[in-house]
Length: 187
Ligand code: SF4
Ligand code: SF4
Image (cartoon, rainbow, N blue to C red; front, side, top):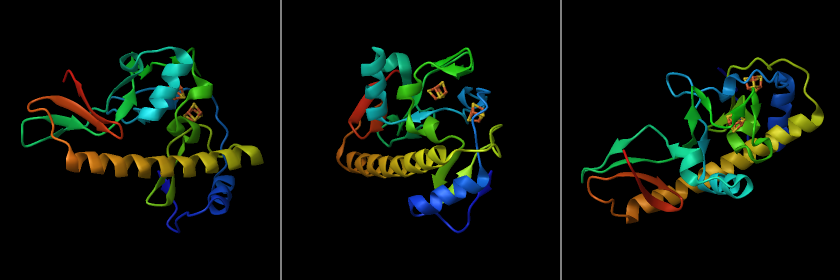
């Protein structure tokens, strides 16, 4: 993984860095496959799940599952703080013949892969498409989506913090806490 120690705070800086790295998707499908370590699980926000539900007429449980990293609460509850897309046979539920079956509705994390921001730094995951010529439109689109995603992550985190402070967990239950509240699931 490469990182940019100088940090990235605006779209022009970000675009410049993406332009210099270059990227064009080779459609290998690797980033849509779930590894043994869950490292490729696609984290999704509640509003992203709702957008897919309304566009693809799916149920929540058929497309999203609680993120497998869980924490223990003192009252015996077990909780996780996010959702991820369902995986089937080691690949994302939406990967069909190496293509994304919900390309127009794909979540922000898929729109920006292999790039992501961590503490304002641009980081790059392993990807076959790195170093391939990228269009100016591609540069700007990825930069924009990266900034939108960071904003969405900040908002989600803030709401989850508030819920954690003010919500009583059902004792002994398995729950997901997200920006919409607390949802019990079968753990
Ligand atoms: S983004 Fe990279 S890893 Fe994912 S399908 Fe394209 S080339 Fe493959
Ligand atoms: S939603 Fe589409 S792009 Fe994202 S991991 Fe699944 S198949 Fe790949």
